[in-house]
Length: 266
Image 1 (tube, rainbow, N blue to C red):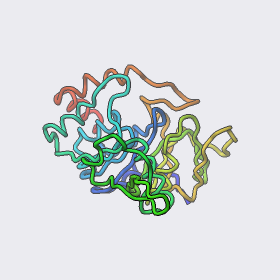
Image 2: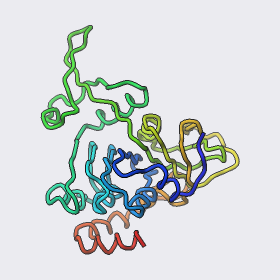
Image 3: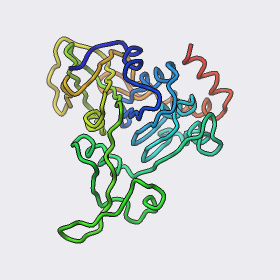
C-alpha cells in the first residue's frame, strides 16, 4: 500500500545511485519538482528513461545525474534544443552521456510489455528508419503464424517511476486526468513508484475519463502543490511558456546554468 511522505523523504528512500529512473508526463503533469529534488540530493549514474525528455531532463543531465538516456524525442517544446543534453553528448560535459533512441511507439510498447510482465513487445514500427542499425535494443522478429517480419523491443522495467497527478486520497489512491501519456503503464512497469500530487483529499470525486492508480500499485505519494510547473496540471494551473523561453538562455551557457544549479541546491 502507498505511504504518504514528504518529497525529500520519498526521493531519499526510492531513488538510488545507478538506478534506472523514469519521470513520465506528456506535455502536462511533468514531475519537475521531483526531478529537481533528485538533483538536490546529488544522485549519480542514473539511467534516465522518458518518451519526451524536456527541460527537467536537461536539468538532470546538466547536473551530472545521468550516465545514460533512453528516449524517443528530446527538446524544449516550442523553443528548440536541450543545450545541456547537447553539451553532454557532444562534449561529455559534465559527464559522458550514453543514448538509446527509440520511436514513440517503441517506447510506449516497451512500457506496456513491462507492465504486462512480458519480456518484450512486438510492433510494426521502425520501418523505413535506420534506428535498428543504431540501437541494440531493436531487433527483427518473424511471426510464427504469418511469416511477417516485425520488430521486437525489450520490456522497460524501471527501478523507480515518478509521475505527477492532480489528487490522491489519504490511503494513497491516485487520480489524474487530462493528457495521460504513459504514466499508468510506466508506474505498473516499475519496481518502485512515487507519485507527486497537487493535493491530498479525504475522498476522490469521480471524474469522466480520469485514471485511478490504486494504492497497491504505488509505493509512495507526496503532496507537492505546483509540482509540475512550468508544465501544467489540468484543473489547477496553466503552462508557464515564459519559463520554457527563459530556460533556453540559461541552458545555453555553462556559467549561467551553474548559477541556476546553485540556486536549486541551496
